[in-house]
Each structure stands twice: as structure tokens, then as C-alpha cells.
Image 1 (spheres, rainbow, N blue to C red):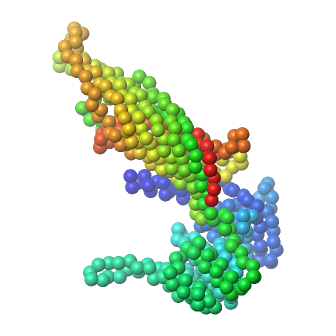
Image 2 (cartoon, rainbow, N blue to C red):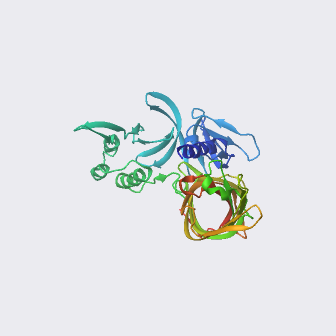
Image 3 (cartoon, one colour):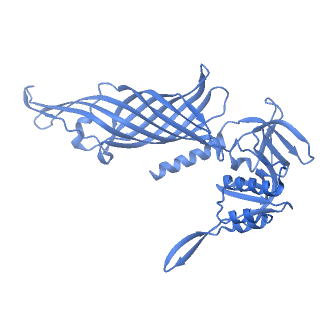
Length: 415
């Protein structure tokens, strides 16, 4: 399971690296102060801090600019980046810092190697890193991790014109929303009616959607070499896969501060499966024949939690998802008929069991691909999802394989 979650993390890193270009209208400001309008590749915060991929028209060749080659660049949605030299961990480098707030004080954001960094600039233009490091202390033989909250001291100096704001800083949290909120208050107090700007405010707000989910499932059962001998009768072939409709509900939200194309999706649905086995084997010493006929019908409530990536591409956007799921058995009907025949084909023994060997809670992994598109001016999600899980207690070699075709119809979208 640990390796599975590692695979998810590596997959998401790969998305950022291998994803198609997503060019959006914007402009760059070069070192000669020329403003050039065109299209900029839209990526996550980490990539946007290191380079700007720009082209003048949709059909022209692109060029990648480093922070030392531009003064700034901006997308049409207002997300704005300034080139600034910065010393982090004793290393001097230049980055594109995301401009959060522009007013009596300025705030910037940088994501580097998965870590969030916030910076502030006072009226003199001095750029200060807002630090909140973790330190380990030992007290009474026990180790504790404390946050230094140095940023509060730094902000108290920057907000020196307002005692009220300085007091609020004492309980301030270090995040985008808190910094922008207190910057607005400070600006209104010390700058009056002068304008201020919150750059990229809309772009940084997560977008969510939810609605009904309908689909059709195909289920079959496979066995591995580790299937125990007491379950020998499951080595027979199924008469046919089980098909059933499903109905449920989904919720999806994205992470614009990381990459707006990465979504967290949860969906739950109700479905059933109807399976049959027919198995016979011959005893080698006396040549008796054992016959097992098994029928199983189970009703499930299924939960799926996945990371979903939406590729930027025209009206039909391909999607890919990876995650985990569980199936909770709500009700079941199980019947196993056993018959023993001698060498003359005469039945010498019969038996019947209604005790199901299947686990009532199945856990497994999920992979899927699909599209996001418009039908009759209505957005829909079409996903083909593969689920696999063990269905015996302790995962004893019998697996459920399900291929589901789901259609999600958002009733509500918001931010």
C-alpha cells in the first residue's frame, strides 16, 4: 500500500512534466520595459516560478524565458509574476514571484521544492522573507516541535504605521488569505482611498462541482496462485460477467495554487453483482467426481477517492485518474450446491450451503481515463474506471475486477 501511494505521488509529478501545453492570453515585460502580448503556458506554481514559456500567436514557435530575461509576466486572469533576486538557504538566485497584494505594502508568494514561501515588501521596496521555521526542543525528557513564528516580528516592523494592525499580527497565520486580508486593512488605514490590487484573486480560488452519477458496471472474478485449496471450487470459470446499472453522487474540486488541472474527486454509488460458478473435479484415487454450482448476488455501496488530472485541450478534454476505493456489502444472497458422484455417475452425496465466504468490506485501487466535454450546452464527465480488490478475508487469492462506465452531470459549480 505504501508503494501504491508513492506511485500516486510520482504520477502527479509526471503530470506536471509531461502535460500538454496550456497556452492562455497574457503578456510579458522584457528588460527593456517593452510589453509584448501573446500567449503564456499555464502551469503550476512551482513551474511558473522558474520559467515563462511564451509565444506571440497561437501558431508561432514558443520561447522559454528565465527570471533573469524578463521583468514580469501576467495571465489574463490577473495572476502576475515579478522577477526578483532572492537568497534562500544561503543561495542567491532569481525567481518569478507571484504578486499577491500591491498597495501600501506588497506581498509575494513562491513555491520551491514543494515548500511555500511568503515575502513582504515595505514602502522602501525592501524585500523580507516571512519565516516560520520548525525547531525541536527537549523538555522533561520529551521532544517537542515548535514553530518560531518569526514572520510576526517582521510584519510588526513593516506595519509600523498602525498599532491596531500590529496587534492583529500577534495572532496571524502565515498563509495567502491571512496576508491579503491584513494587507487590505493596513492599506485602508494608512493610504485611505488610494487604490490597491489583489492579483490573481479569482485564479487562486478552488473551483468545485457536484451532481448525480449514473453508470453501468461489468464485474468478473479472477483467482491467483495463492488461492487456498479450501476454495478450489472458485477455480472454475464464470458463466458470464455480471452487468448492472449504478447510481450515485460525485464531488470534485481543484487545487489552483498547485495546478488548477489537478482535482480531488470523490464519488459514491450503489450497484449490485450477480455471479455464477460451475466447477467439477475428479478425485485421483477413487475417481469420484465433485461438482459445485455456486450463485452469488450482492448489493454494494461503493466509495472512490481519486486524484484526477484534466488535460488542457479544446472542447473535449481528456482526463486521467488514480486512487483507492472501498465496497461495503449491504445485502447478499449466496448458494452453493455440492454433489459427489461415483465412477458409475451415480450421486452418492449432496449438500447445500448459504454461508458466503466473501468479505463484507473490500478495499482496492482504481485507475481511470475519460473526457470532460459539453453536450447540449451542458458540461458532462464521462469516465471509464477500472477497480480491483480482494474479496476474501485476508486477500486470499480471489479478486474482483470491475470496469465501470460513469457519466457525471454537474448540477452546481462554484468557487
